[in-house]
Length: 286
Image (cartoon, rainbow, N blue to C red):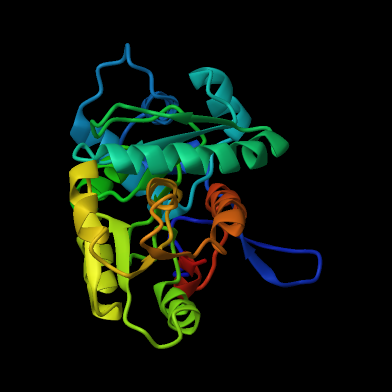
């Protein structure tokens, strides 16, 4: 990580140089605003008239200085201490929202174990979120960046590829899935059925890996899947809808489901603590 010219270096007990943590005063100085303004922005004070341009200057200074405010102070002010919010695209189909509910059922016990409250927000606007972290499911990159620009909290892409080392992203390991499906179907051709992605990079990746892909976003589109003999799925929603169809040789790849939540929670912890990790460690597959 490049050293910030405004930071102060001190000596640790072992004689090694270490970087002093930035303060809200440092953020205010770099952004050219008052300390009070920094506090208002971080805590999301709606009753203060702060322009969007000023907010962005504060967020940019926060990121440049790697500033981490006291999470307890922020939580007390926003009344949202230890909460995780799930968001999705304004164009998300019902199937995607069903899939999020399946994820929440598995992820919620993990959140409770660590003292976090999990919720799903139907708000599709790019606004500041009063939470500890935000998970964005299958969100187009344009919407993802618009939302992240408005927030200081960790914003993590789930089932989406932003390919930017500033953000963590967690997706299914499609290459591994393909190999296991080929073994399961013993070399026979198969179709991969998947809820139609809104994230273009995910869509392109899937079509590049699998020979035959059927994207579905409604019950009516399942008719194309029913024409196939061998079908691969990796989403609980599609499996539940197709499992009773006796004419299908259905393979449900689900090895990622029990581990995905733990991987995502680990990303949240690292992002909140602002740990300095290698760029490639932000791109995770399960």
